[in-house]
Image (cartoon, rainbow, N blue to C red; front, side, top):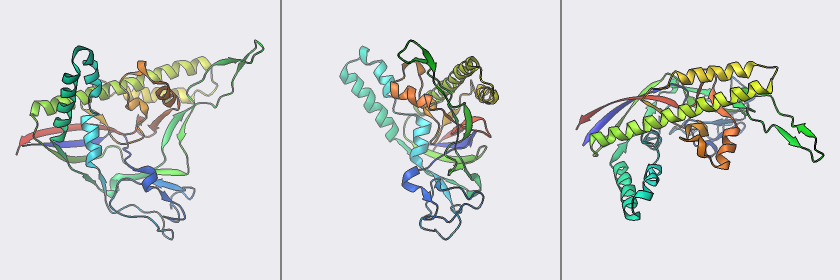
Length: 300
């Protein structure tokens, strides 16, 4: 048996919530948010505390929070690598492909993750922030051979649904977890490195898509150049993490660009989701959920 001691550091805020299932509502679960009376709904971070049906009390933090073991496992090991298996399907028999799948499942079954406790002072209540209206269809034919431009909202980067706030782990917070495993050490390390490489590709996706948007926005000749500077800031910040080989994305609201490794083969619905905009934290200038990982392994 081996034990990996994992030290995580949030580079940008991390959002971990069951959303609708655990949402807290003004007038039902809390009377108001003291810092912002306009807040109607709160998506809480994972906690064992119950804060439901406290309509006479102001919203308050839980006594303790945690990151579920399942969330850590998924973020650290990545998705089941069936995509890699599919690449060799043409060169292998169905039986051999099934064997690869079973080996992957067997490897993951040998991992034992634990929930990680998070101190309340490391949790913040904040709006989600999103860069939107970054895409346009161009011109259309009105049927009379006249080219008519559609009217579009100006690109913005601001609070998304201002009446909703989310509890999230602050940026620059370190926390530690342990993994017990029976697999070979080199197999474990290879899996981590493969997932770190996947994160590198996802960061490259963000940079490429932002570069594309900047080019288009310049073509639109918008009077308001604020969004150009903001997108340039995000791009520059992301470029600072290129080549780092110990990063993962953890939690929700990372956006589809943090879930794809190849932008050239998007399905129609995936392309539409990309067009909906990017969730990006204004303070860190980064997508939500970017986390640095360091680890040591020992025999137990």
